[in-house]
Length: 166
Image: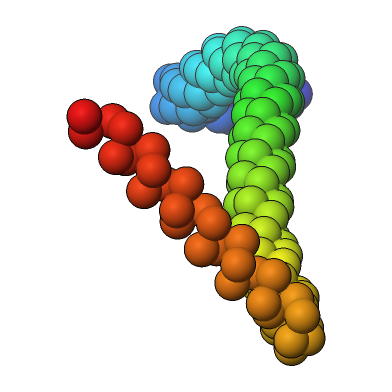
């Protein structure tokens, strides 16, 4: 029994040493570890909340980007339509200007051709008249009649001018 008591005393002594020196250090280490785990849980919750907020911000940004892209696309379509209409109007003005220019040139060419035709007809008429006069005067009888008629006309003119002076 003395062994047993000495074993119990040794056991109690070990328990006292453990309780006095080892347990407080273990508790301190455990408390520190628990505090670290608590901080990590809080940090994880905050990170989860920030992730949720970031996901919402991302979703909002994507939605805004889609709306902005649709607006930009619609604006671009409207601008393209306006540019197309402007180009069409400009082309129509250019076509009208070219058509007017063509009409003006056509009128000028028509006038020029009319002048040239008049000149040619006049020249041909003069040549034909000269030819007719030459052929008429080539005949001696016709030449005499023409000279007699000319002299009669001169006499008639001098007779009229003599009456007018009196």
